Amino acid sequence: MKELISKIIEFRNERDWKQFHNSKDLAISLSLEASELLENFQWRTSEEAVKENIENIKDELADVLIYSLLLVNDLELDIDDIVNRKIDKNKRKYPVNKAYGVKTKYTDL
Amino acid sequence: MKELISKIIEFRNERDWKQFHNSKDLAISLSLEASELLENFQWRTSEEAVKENIENIKDELADVLIYSLLLVNDLELDIDDIVNRKIDKNKRKYPVNKAYGVKTKYTDL
Amino acid sequence: MKELISKIIEFRNERDWKQFHNSKDLAISLSLEASELLENFQWRTSEEAVKENIENIKDELADVLIYSLLLVNDLELDIDDIVNRKIDKNKRKYPVNKAYGVKTKYTDL
Amino acid sequence: MKELISKIIEFRNERDWKQFHNSKDLAISLSLEASELLENFQWRTSEEAVKENIENIKDELADVLIYSLLLVNDLELDIDDIVNRKIDKNKRKYPVNKAYGVKTKYTDL
Image 1: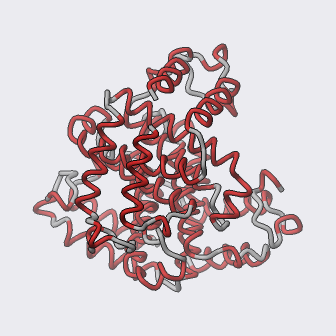
Image 2: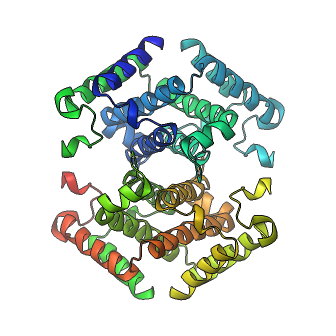
């Protein structure tokens, strides 16, 4: 992961794009890329979309990861740290005995 | 990264949630989490948002990563592979001599 | 507004697209069009974006309205009814004496 | 529609919120509300979502309309004008003889 982040930062530095990358605009970009990923599933069942659009799905998911890693880097976060912390929170929000096999939002559990 | 994916899949299996996780709904979730991340920046400058909301930003960015990793896992993708491939495509779309210091979209370069 | 809805439905019927327009996919489309609108503001101040991209902003905002009106039509809703109801709810969530001049979310007021 | 816009502007003025409403943040809000609308369809079929969540769907669709109308007002646009213009463009992008009964994107028609 460190190696991927290095490559992405190198790509940015070669183009002198750091000047545009404030966190607010990176968060906008991340949201736009997530939409472009979702666009592959529009008007299709999940299976149809994966079958027809897998190459584009890979590219857009990669873009989501790239912008996520830029934010992680620029905000000086640690991926293991933030993801583990969130999984722990989710465990408390969705205790197994209440959440098993149901898709109810935690606010309604 | 493999370890993080294992933890996320373990969390899902303990709750028997695989049954809900088709790729289309995971792509919807990823888009919703990216929006919740962006919500932290609404009505604020980038600096204000980071200062006021960093804890929530960490949580929402973690959620984006969690859903991204679920999609990577379920579609049997390799992160290094898809991200490196996309960086290579971006290098062709944004050659340094044209893209240096400008924020123009590749379609207008 | 009725007239606009008629035109949009006529456009759809001429192409026999009603068969694709379930509400879930229309909600996805609406979200995608809102992202395309937002894309005009990426990497720019609000003023720069409006100055540079006003023609595309008009088109994407129109697309947001078109999908909103399709949902209103297909779910047999009344625009006056749902908007007035929501304004009334917002008045209760954001009473003038608490919300005046502050951008705090109602959950924190 | 004019009447609705007046009510929305009155709501904003009573709270002195015009100062926060630059177009970029309004476009962010519109995107966030479209996501909240979409959230009602997550993990559900279209029919299940409409049956279970119609009241929330009405509220979130109203929020999408409210932010759309704020943008229309602040950018001094005319709804009939921008929607009719976009329908005309869509007619050229999707001619009936090519688009009838198919969900192909215009770039692939």
